[in-house]
Length: 202
Length: 378
Image 1 (cartoon, one colour):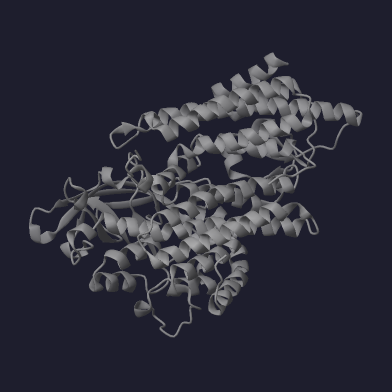
Image 2: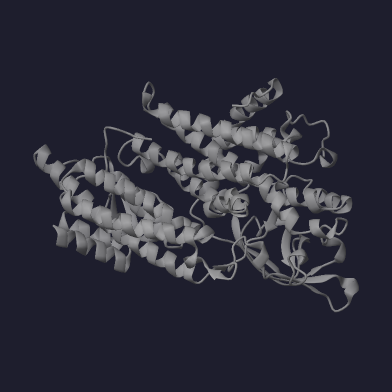
């Protein structure tokens, strides 16, 4: 499983969220999400499927569709498939997060304040170091607990928070719809379709 | 929480009620930020009037409920209106950030020109400060006000700006640039559109699309001498001081927009999950943030140049608003953001407040500025 997770991460790191999602779907294509909506690469949407309109997702090449009802598999098997797929999606998001951080570092290296590149500022370096460290930890979490629903949900929550920490490093350019943050945001929307929880913490 | 007097409580209730009118237009403005149907809303007309100084209102009999009396009253109103929808509020015409700058740096004649230009209620304004290479670091500003060939012709404005709300459609606004190399040479210029060499173009942003954020290109835009702000002020108060004071006031308004959006998000969750007690901790945090914001606004009313209170409020509340949007998505279950378009829109909108009037790291520097200059204790 570790190799599969790493492959999903690599696909997203190299090509963005959509190629990563495509690989995850090829690996576990029978999982059914806990809610009514799921994410698909736009070119995988079946004829007649109901698509939830979303501008940023469309720009990213992703469509959110109302999902098909659960198949005849036993509920416990479906739950296991679901968690494994959510873990693969987590790995995809780790790849997107690393890609986002690469872009952020490049952005910060090209800007200066007070005559010093932003990438050398202590506040900035602290954030970059924390994100690198936390992404390593999330990757390990997905490897060791990819069949544990709460752990996978926790991984997604942490990725969402880390992506925001990284997005802030771009300043206002991180808020452009054609910028690198878009893939992370669409990834978050996709993850929300695959994570369920009984205990909602603030 | 500092107690609100009766007029302020009434203002809060009126604005809370009016927020519902804004919400009805929220998704339409997000889908088509160039639309203008929302401008006919009575509450937006009232906000335009209330945010215009009393001397320049077209209808001096308008009762603004005390909105314009203090920083605290504007914050109280701003929170409740944004609780309806901050995007529609930002899509309103009126003086906005440029008005604060003109009131701070403008002569009576300049203020008159500014408010006359927007008196019909259909005109947006713009405030050009941030630059592509340097963000909002005013000391590194590259845009120039070069003396025209004939000094009697004033200046020629050249440079580029980014993330300027309504620059593509604003009738008048303020653009900051430098007349020389020193910090004191940074000046604000009043610009009326259309102007030769001046071009604003909307940027496609992730959220808060009603703000119509633009890039701005300026190539030798003529600026008559009388359009330069601050000539009647001491040299030290003509440029950076005005920027700082403008941002100080607006930082609280941005925090108010963020808090209003977070409260609206919490309200939405409570509506969807009646009798669910899982919102109690989040609700308590939002109440505490309201208290923090009110106290910060009251502090600025006492001391307009106080930097720490607005920065503290903005730093905390923009973060809390983002956390609230994540909590709401979790609270409403799998796929909630796609099944509840308003919630999804607000989850994008809250991200914008981070970038307006200084990022979190800039606020951190403001908050600790006086600490870093203290002498080491021996």
